[in-house]
Image (cartoon, rainbow, N blue to C red; front, side, top):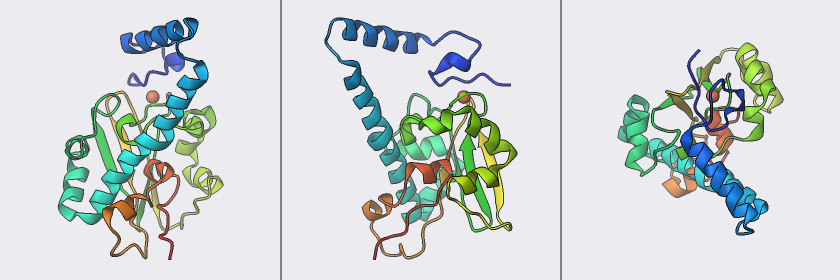
Length: 207
Ligand code: FE
């Protein structure tokens, strides 16, 4: 098995990275000095999780839906195409984007811990890190997806992508019906974090 490097290393048989140790030390020191309340830290994490990260990924998807050349580059070299929009860095050094089609549905996991593409999706949701998801999504992906509200026809092939320290995956969801003629900004509003993990479809446009 390859090593995983996602900063949440309690499942890992090796010490925290220097960067993670520094972050923990700084957080502890600031909290001790009363300079930063831990709920403020939680708030920052929440903003990063909910807003900043997934929004970046949504912009990538909206661009791919709008620009066939970009989509081609994205599927060929995810890291480079994502960097075209200014996103990259920690936990996104080697990005692979996998495309959902009417025949193939992709879903992302990390069976060992919680490796996740931070630059495009932010921080992983807690269920993504749960032992249950990590264990079951590989064994019985259709059942897990159904429980999460995504029923797939038997004719659709399900592919599960196990992230690692080297490679982080992102799903390019199918462009929803009825979204013709929408602007890139309008399209990006249809792209949820869960759609880019592959446990949901992109939202349908409101009429
Ligand atoms: Fe991992």
